[in-house]
Amino acid sequence: MNKEKNNESKINESKTNELKNIYKDFSLTLLSFDIFILLYPFIAKILGKINPLLVECPYNNATGKLCPFCGGTRMINALWHGTKIEIVSIPVIVILCYVVTNIIFRVIYFCDMKRNERIKKYFLIDVITLSLLIIYLAFVIISFIITNVL
Image (tube, rainbow, N blue to C red; front, side, top):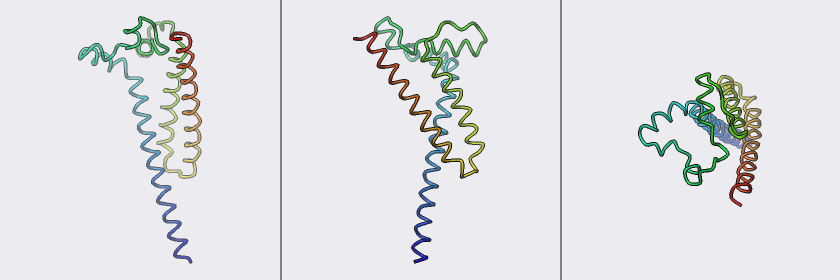
């Protein structure tokens, strides 16, 4: 009986450790992606020299209209250089705020990773914020389709 409980607890512990490792990898991936977004104006200069099509908005090129995310690179570039920010769409501001807070959240998570009791709280916060971001982006895309395509 005790051996079965021990085996069961070892299996549960190994599953928990596996989930923690998956979440750690997921967090590292999101942190890398967020840092990429903040560094994109510098990366875009290099990519633009290789092939200008890599940094152009395909929707803007095809239709001549601005997409909901047009201006994001210009805004981040202006922030980096301390110049005046042009009028930018709300989705760009929301995503930039999310990226900055997400970087702070991930850094705090990685600094606090040793405490096992807090991982559930981090995961819950993460699920809530990502769900809200996905819902927000869905509304932005739907409203964009309704106003520009239909």
